[in-house]
Length: 422
Ligand code: COA
Image (cartoon, rainbow, N blue to C red; front, side):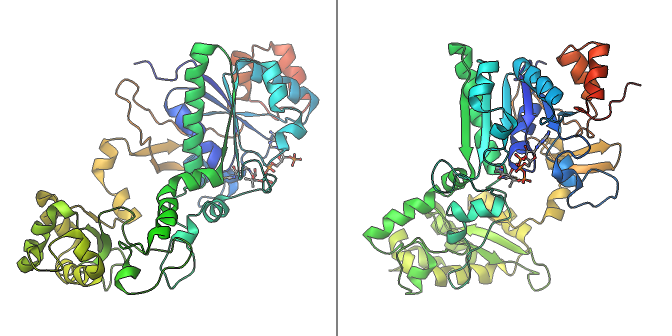
């Protein structure tokens, strides 16, 4: 079956997490992703958070599937010539260097566009144009600057970052969408364009509902927040809301059987208005269906703590999976708090390709998260991440069409490091 992005060549100049997430998706969809790495060094993550000495880290392998690797020194004169040829050859250039790094190499957008007017050049930076545009940024900086941290955590605690990598992987997803949109545009217009995504902007986009609440504060307290029921006044900014639901249907994380010893024996429980009566019957409070102060959603808003305490008294008598089994048939939305261990052991996720087992020559078999986006006519085969420079010779020959003597000259210039000609 033909892959959706078959024939698209991607010059992958990304490193760490945000950019590699993006190019990995392009690779999963069938693009030929050529990862350019500094000779002898490579993407810094290859050697970060090492669990098996001598092998590429899981940090690297899990972000760089379906790619080829070429070692290339882009600051060496011959290396720049090879890079220029790659730019001519490729449809997309993706990079997430620190601000100005690509310009310092001599490959500004203007220069790249001049070399290949059809190319799409996609960049991730920490901040958009403005006072912070020159800053280097990592995940948690973006979570803080994008408004997520100030709205995460409990009211009486400090701001919190989340485990989901919304700054890095979230930005990679935004960039990926920008790239395929620009490719679609190029199909009709014939011209390339620049795609830029700032990590601060991506996090803010994902925290959009918190900006909604910021403006709703002008009209009075946010009644669906626990603090309203607790009589705690609101300040000027959207507060931290603990585990309160971010939407119009109140919800909380509640203890389940075994919570005393199992840190994940909890369930999320949503009292969607449409199933309120079923919730009342299930927890043994049938009178709440009609009682004054409980019958309608607005009446319940100042009693949410009391209501969830009562539901929790019920969930504590059940395991999180029993809660799910009892609530699902009644259309009551609940979700067990699943640990990474439980997820890694879920066979159903392997059946759908959401989890995959990948074999690697240095590390043996490991679990990775596969492609979460399923295309019916372009199924994804996850292939292992490349070793550093594994495809240098192949790319020089088959993609850039250098002959043997040219390759010898490139190698002796020090532009590409060692090449395996065996
Ligand atoms: N050949 C030669 N030099 C290379 C090279 C290659 N193949 N690849 C990279 N380099 C050079 C760069 O040109 C740069 O040199 P310079 O500073 O002399 O111009 C140098 O390596 C380091 O690049 P830089 O991007 O500054 O890496 P860093 O490790 O110092 O910073 C980040 C890392 C992530 C903080 C930074 O890249 C950044 O802010 N990126 C944008 C935001 C982002 O994506 N952050 C999230 C990452 S998950």
